Image (cartoon, rainbow, N blue to C red; front, side, top):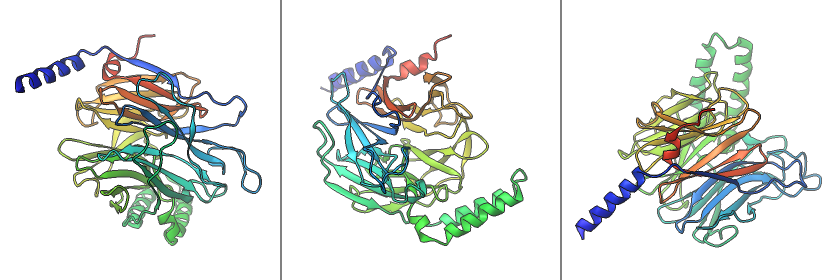
Length: 406
């Protein structure tokens, strides 16, 4: 029996090693022609235990009457969480459906994950202050399901709000302000105005409790804990929320020791250390990086990677091969006309292979999500022109083949 097991394992490894490059793609849905102001953005994709794929995003819903309706945009009061399912073996995605919709306000930036107990989590913020107070008014919410194998939205077993209590934000903000004041490229009057605004926020507990936004997949740690990467839109500070009991209780990490970063994305290595990459709002136009050796509770000072950053969403993923994947826009500035996938063999310090899912000068492709299937292939979703969500199915061999010559 042991000989047969070893033979099958070796055969599987050889098959994977000589897999043919794979890439196919399709739109999950067509943007509704009857609604020229329709907006869809910020998707997330997961593979379910039965092989189904599920994707979510935020989208404009039904136009609301005054006083609820203000203006059709990505943060207007009719925005909801949309979703779709691609059944195992199916060629097409289901007609899109509503995953969550809070009447009169905006639901945004959803993410999903399936934990080791096969529980599906949906996490998203509701912008309680729209239209005047948008991202900084985010109230974090989550839902958990064990019944999601049928068409349409999952049946939620648990729904709740999550109000992070992160200690140490003020110290990180103060240190970053002091560093900004020392920057000779920053006008004194601009720094002083910024400090006055921050001081006002530091004196109001609402700014600490609201404004927390998810974006990338939560990380299911090797011990089964779910680590939810978050950033606070009031202070541009990142921290992690961690649950070991399916969302009944949560603990919170120390903030990452630098302000000016958002939308962290995480990967855990076999030695249980965790790497985080961040959307960086600074002048460097590069993605930033930090590490944790205690399960995500504390983080090293940030370092710059060589990966370009135009101010867009990113995601990382540790593959079964041991290589680290990063999906991102590899432009220094707008527009987000290129969407790249890179692979690293040294924990993201350097990137040996890069290929583009999209590269169209007048296009916009952004906010990608990626997951690895049980068969080793990769499933990704991303926004196209803020009007629809595109799905791509590809593999490592396709990435390593590189971009075709033009």
